[in-house]
Length: 153
Ligand code: 4NP
Image (cartoon, rainbow, N blue to C red):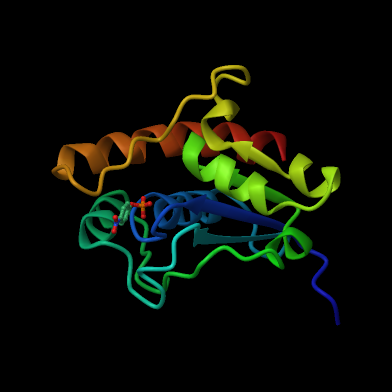
């Protein structure tokens, strides 16, 4: 039987820091029988890896377990699988759009923080090279955006 759920994909660069958090946060806010939330990275260098320990820890601190996730790379086939594709920053947004072959595919792609300010095009900062404060900030931004998204979707 085909999956009738609404399919949502969160996308960052490595799929180990930001988008695994976005996936875990949104999953917690939506009914899994109605919504399938996944994540991917535009880069392939961390395929198969667990989320970054700093993302695991900030999620756990907020009552969310993301250790079931493994990094995957975004592929063109994801335009067919997913109804909504959310990019964490402009570079990822542009890289996803560059793979689209038609307007229907392009229209599926949006910046996640535009849930907070639809014309802001604000970015979820890449926390990879920073400390744990950066991950707390990413968590807060994504929690705010996903709360709004979960109510409207
Ligand atoms: P993410 O963070 O895109 O939020 O998963 C990064 C993870 C790894 C790298 C860069 C960003 N990296 O350069 O390996």
